[in-house]
Length: 317
Image (cartoon, rainbow, N blue to C red; front, side):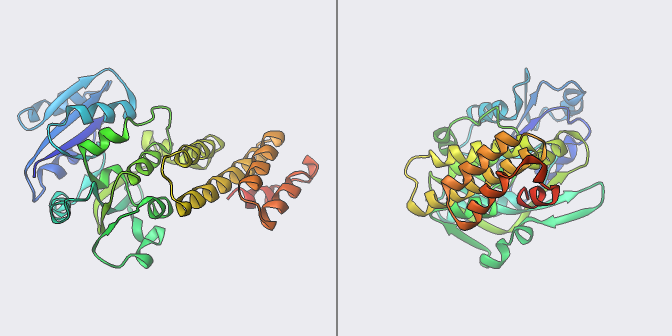
């Protein structure tokens, strides 16, 4: 079983060699490595030059991560693709773990593992499954989800760095949406969840780097801003429009959309955009009516002077 390892890179000369070494050190060695340099302005090409006999280096004008990953699917020469961001690391048995799971069950469209979030600047490492509460629900070391959408949305079971995915399924899912900045992978994972069963490995096999500066941190920090929450609302709308959603799936996504609209509404009110905020809160109530949502509508309808920061901040969490 041969794999294609795809590493998109943009201005990563300072860290990409460490990422490459984590691939070279894999216990499973039947793979090709494709590094796509997405218009880097630093010396990424120079740093990678000594490794040209071990990698396929592709330079292109800047297309962004969405365009780069979409092109990578076309460039890959195998049926199985593993994506690794250029500042993240795989544990040595990562690919071996995926291959064992995928060969044991040929019906799987992908296998995904747990991950460690590493904040290098403070030396803090977080087990993603323990942080998200997955460990309390899933005890088996390896299992299959035949209907993965709701568990995926609930727990965030798929990061692109933590999965090996069929190329044919990636082509079926289509391109990443280029104007989604914060929730791009979250939306894409939802599409994958409707295309077949997933294999799940509960042990972490990837270390995902988070820092206080640079592009990665800026994307993470945007998730709780008005712009980030508005994007999440759009993503839930896109997921709700997927074909063949079951009743449970539709109900769950509608609830999440309602929650996101409410959160967006109160964030807007906090920033002084009271009319737009009230509109989102009313929309949240229409999507999923309850006593609590009605109280939020009434609270948002109070004169702007009565919108205490404490009340708005509580509802905006």
